[in-house]
Image 1 (tube, rainbow, N blue to C red):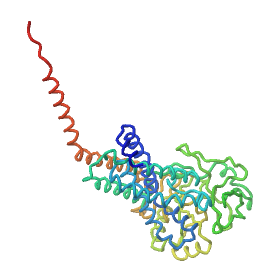
Image 2 (image 1 turned 120 degrees about the vertical axis):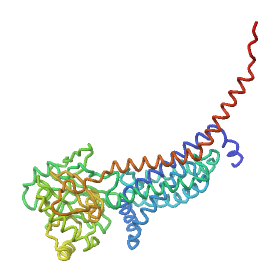
Image 3 (image 1 turned 90 degrees about the vertical axis):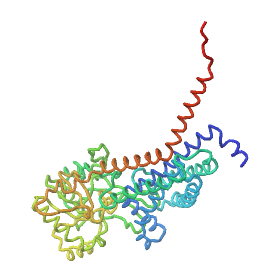
Image 4 (image 1 turned 180 degrees about the vertical axis):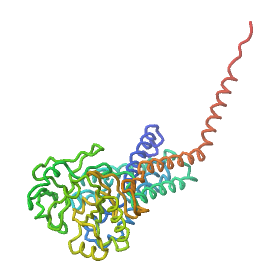
Length: 448
């Protein structure tokens, strides 16, 4: 086998295949690491799901650290493979990663313990069997590169490859910083800015009689989906996982976003389980939604900022509404502890986390449409009077992402020019010298 590899590794077709394999295998790692890094909250939630399914919920405190570390590892590993840096060691690390991931994804494919692996965050959803197939193909690509990767020089010389890794690390960490402390720079979730949170069907049916079920909720367990009413929701601790819901009388009711995507109308429930979505979001009044997916961990230290935001909203003729999946006992405890004067309603945990990241997160809604969303800690100068519409819209996610990408590519190009520029100059000089020698060897025309 070694003789065969040595015989073909320097063939042109083999070198072209090696470059293509670098781009494919490395590109998958880059995309996987970036999609995890851009949304560390989502990756943290997914790792917590894994730990719970494995019977290790006590390790959930390490989920955030693991999420950021995994994003950095995959992104840097992908950049190393794409650029041909650390041609041997990078592949050994990639092999180790796949030898861990393949058994995990095989377990997921067989048991469906976690319906979505989260390999690419919310950017791309694959079934567990598709994920297993993807990982097997990646493993084959890594094995190919382990045999032939040294036949093609890396884009950067050994002396500066550490700089490429440092730039990659700084990039993914900066992306993760914005994603965790403000909001993801790229919002792959169903509720980006511009989304209508309540459908026309819900508004039209807001006058339904009390006690009438307006939504059918779909939960999955052991790979099968079942429908439930609001009065018979299953226990998620028993393995049921929320999938989606639809309006009982108009199941086709979808909300068309300004972005052209679609999402179901959200469901806000009062303490009796009645749907009050239309009452909260149906009017033209401006609304500040406080999303608290983990109410016990919000902490009393945040109560002052929340109450200050509520006072500012009242002055600005807006309403503040808190949404949480917490129990009524936890809600009552929070109200006593924080002296909150704003109403607190229930919402499904999974859906709440999809709207905005943070605990708490702040979402500004007008006419049922999201105008901006931020984590509470990223908001500053919440003083009276304050213009709510502009309070959190100074976060230019697209502009920040563009500047970060431009900075990374510019830095990588600068390193390449400094590191490999002399090779280009040498090539041009040699080419010029050959052309000069060819011209000097041509016979001169003699006059008649």
